[in-house]
Length: 368
Image (cartoon, rainbow, N blue to C red; front, top):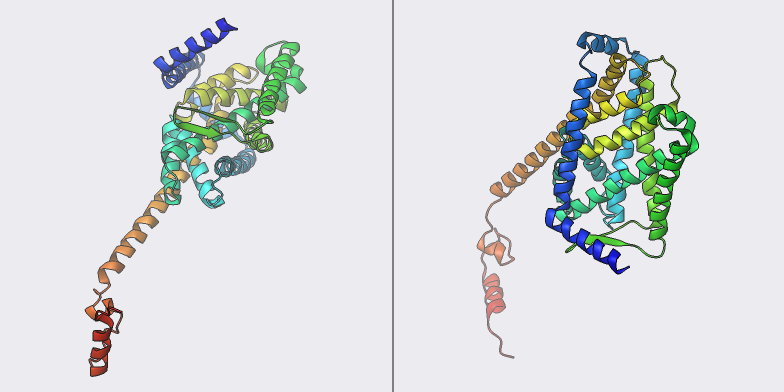
């Protein structure tokens, strides 16, 4: 036991010396570099014309249906921030503000990359009018990330545990291995919920502490994360080529794993990582057709929301500037109060002996 404590202390000291953020950044860069290398190797024989033809051959009805699921997916994303605010006790922030912050933070953060910084900056700008600072925004980012991870583990665990044979087409593992991995993922989530049952847990480093959502709130958190992934996987499934026929579970497992790796790399639009994962896990499709479907998915899920988020934030800033300039002009045009106004009398009141006596009487010193 003493050796274990000594090892844990040494590990904590080493991580503190190196920095967890640096380790995460190096890991993200390695993952991104490996994905780009694999993508270049896999696409060396791909013709751009064939990919464009595959995009053009996609059914407009499929694109329309996928757009509807993407819309629903971004609706679920708005609950990430709404839940985090309620978990932190900020029930005064309305849903509309949380929805704007959540939508814009996800669209800009994942569209431009390094979501920890870009999404945090967007949230800080939106929530500043409600008195939230850097610390509160950091906590919101942590809880939204926890929502994604819990939903990812549950969705992936359920898919692997309930349909291990179907999932083998994506993971290329025997069914028993898929079932085992799924049960391990579900056991990890169950263990986390059990850890929350006795009392509300607080985690943090130094002076920064975050009260984690309790067990009942965590179930809501898991539902939000799972719904987001399910809707995204359905949108992907709708856009895939009609042949060969593939079970939805296979596509769902591939999508969840691709989203997980894309989240880890912090690259703009999960550049290369998402595509490589889908190409590796769905080899039954022709590369050109699969890439065409993924290009449409990227446009619907990343490019279009990014443009819309930038427009929405631009309009919000323009309204704020106009409101500020309006207040400035109002104060500039307001006349300076006269001496009579400052004393509480009407500015145009005539001076009479009675008013003089009242003024003198109100300012005279009375020792009694």
